[in-house]
Image (tube, rainbow, N blue to C red; front, side):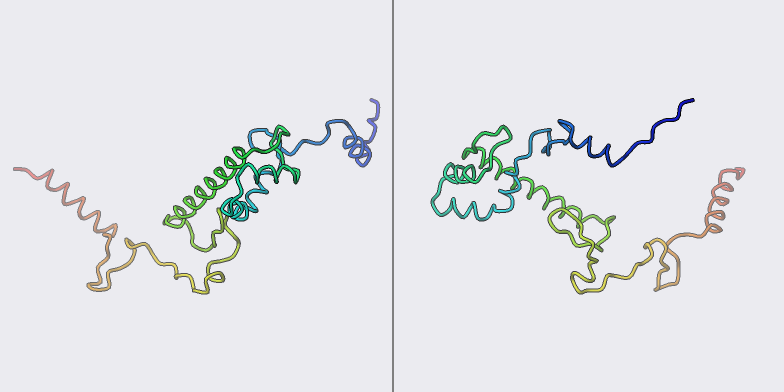
Length: 175
């Protein structure tokens, strides 16, 4: 059997990188080309809204963004309608993220040991972030003994067996 030639991995990486179409285009969700418009608008949303509140139209602001090299996924100039659509999309995403975070904070099965910032959990424990100590773990209420009379909130196995035997006796009792 013929010996297989050994691959030169450095050369393979270099040749593959030089091949046409070797690198994938950075795509946005849905397979569209990513132009950076959404990220640019998200980063400077407050400034863009302030410009519009200052008297500029969305069309003028969109023309300024196009002059700085931002385009649509098709490579066309940004219009005022495109810009307001992107802004609305960013606001919807922020609202959804805030709603999701609020629902998560109210869930009882989610631990409170992380600080939530804009939809993602940070690795900062809550004790370091807020300065307060986290509560001590406690037993479930059905496992805790009643302090007032010393009785348990759940019957023991022996009590279960005695109750089952009493039910069986009432069924088997002759009239």
